[in-house]
Every structure is written in structure tokens, then in C-alpha cells.
Length: 146
Length: 146
DNA sequence: TGGAAGAATGCAAAAGCATCTCATTTGTTG
DNA sequence: CAACAAATGAGATGCTTTTGCATTCTTCCA
Image 1 (cartoon, helix red, strand yellow):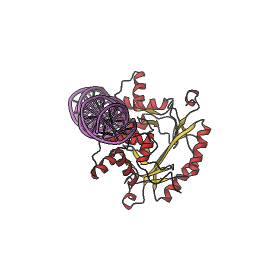
Image 2 (cartoon, chains in turn orange, purple, brown, blue; image 1 turned 180 degrees about the vertical axis):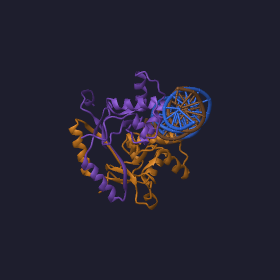
Image 3 (cartoon, each protein chain N blue to C red; image 1 turned 180 degrees about the horizontal axis):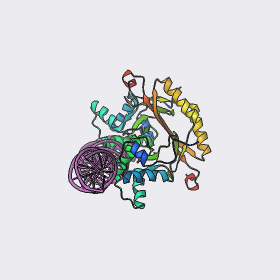
Image 4 (spheres, rainbow over the protein chains, first blue to last red; image 1 turned 120 degrees about the horizontal axis):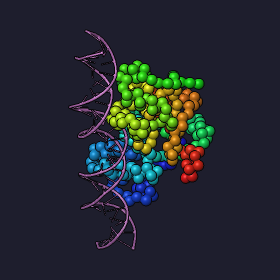
């Protein structure tokens, strides 16, 4: 199963009502190629610097926020500091984060989704969003040791 | 079903290896009587001021952090700014938050808990903690309207 | 019960993250 | 390719949380 699409481009930026500028194109491209898929604004800043693109941190925050509004990326507030962003490929999922190395994996579980709806209903809430994050130690040898 | 206990006291502070000081006693008492149960550091500060106790914000943060380490309170990072704290009565639960009025309700669902363990297991993770928060509009009339 | 020793507090300064301001630069459109 | 609106960069700013340090309070034992 695939999501909305596999490749984003300048069209996505344009469709969001934004001008197609170098910073926006670079940031979008970076999110696309990003190994871990979950990066902080500062990660983006540094990665772009490494790639020879000196784009201001303010611009990165601005662009990521705009992308978020446009539905191109999703912002997560994991524990411990900065927000992390990931490309929104149209498939909702939750996260499991290693508290040792920071690795982030995704998962989706229909049963959990359904239960949440039922719980909200019981309490008279209309669900707009939810955030489920499991924190633990990943299978990495260095992380397993307490 | 009741949790660990219903009343906290100076003994809890002492047992945590902390001296029993007026700020700590007042903060603990406030958390106990708190209506909503979920308060930010600043809420604590203001509520104590209203009660005639002028305790520095820095102290509040320090004490809440110490209480957290001692397992007396739990800190949550809901979206939108400040962390909120609640007394830890020993019963784990998740939250459903109204994005309009800020109301926080608690829930616990064994099915969701179990699924999380299974998911973590599948991915080779050892669960240390998890945070599930549902965001939506509560049943309050003022919140229902978009 | 008095008083020394160490811990806790208050204040102000600092740190961390994110956003905003504003002068300058860059897309876009005709 | 000119003109306008939008976007960028650099630094200032705001907010929450933490920290350093001098002073004050708890604790505990003589």
C-alpha cells in the first residue's frame, strides 16, 4: 500500500499557494531523502549547511510551518526538546521512539485507532487529532543495555 | 478502584529524600486539591499567589521536577506551550484534551495498552513509557461550535 | 534547646526553542 | 524585462524552563 504519492515537487509548493523558492525546494527535497524521516528544524538547518545550502534557521521554521499548514509535513512534539517534522505521505501513523539513540519507527494499528474513537465518543469529544508515542529502548545492542 | 493512596503528606516529601519545606508542602497540597488535576507551573504559581503564598516560579519548577523524579507527580507535554503536572496516584492513564477550552479528561484502556506492548515487541523495543493524547472538542456547548 | 551543617529558596541572569521585525532580495506576472 | 508582492536573512524578541549565587530555613545532635 502506498500513500498519496511518492514524490513531492515544486508543484506541491505552488499548490500550497507558495512561491517556488530555493529554500523551499531544498527543504522539501531534504525531507524526501532524509534517512530517518524525522528531523528537527535544526537538523534541517545543519543538513542543508552540509549540503552547501546556507539557509537561515528562521526561514526553515517558517517554511516548515507553512508546509505543515499546507499538509505537506507533519510536526510531532516528542519528549525532550525540539519538534520534529516529517513528510506527510497521507498515511496516518504513530511512533515508537528509542530514548537512547533517538531512532524513530512508525506503526499503525487499526484496533488502537478504533478504541480511541470509542473512548472519545463515550466522553462526548469530537476527535480532531491524536498523538501516541511509545518510548523505550530499541533492539540496537548499544541501546539494550540499561 | 483506588490508587496508591488518597492523601499525600509531608511524609511523602521526606520519603523522597527532600526536606519538608513550606513551598513543597503548599505545592503538594495544591496539586491534591486542584480541581482540574492538571496544572502548569504557572498555574501553580498563580494559584499559590491567590492563596497568599508568594513562592518563586523557579522554586515551583524545581520542586515539581523533584516531585517528578520522586514519582510523586507526572509531567505531560501536551501541545501548545507549557508542561502540565498532575499528582501521580499510581494509576496509569492517558488523556483526552479539548483544544478549545483546555479541559483534560483521563481514560485508561487495557486493549490499547496491550496492543502497544505487542507492537513494541514486534519492533524489538522494550517499552519504558508511552504517551497517548487525543485532541478534540469536548461536549461543552461553547466548544462544539467550530 | 541551641546551633552547626547542609539543603532549599528567591532573584536575576541565562539558556533553549520558536517566532517576529524589517531591510533587502527573489519569484512571478503582464 | 519591469514592477509588485512575497520570501529571505540576521538579529531581536517572547516564552518557558533552568541555573548561579547569596541568603534563609530544616534537620539533627550535643
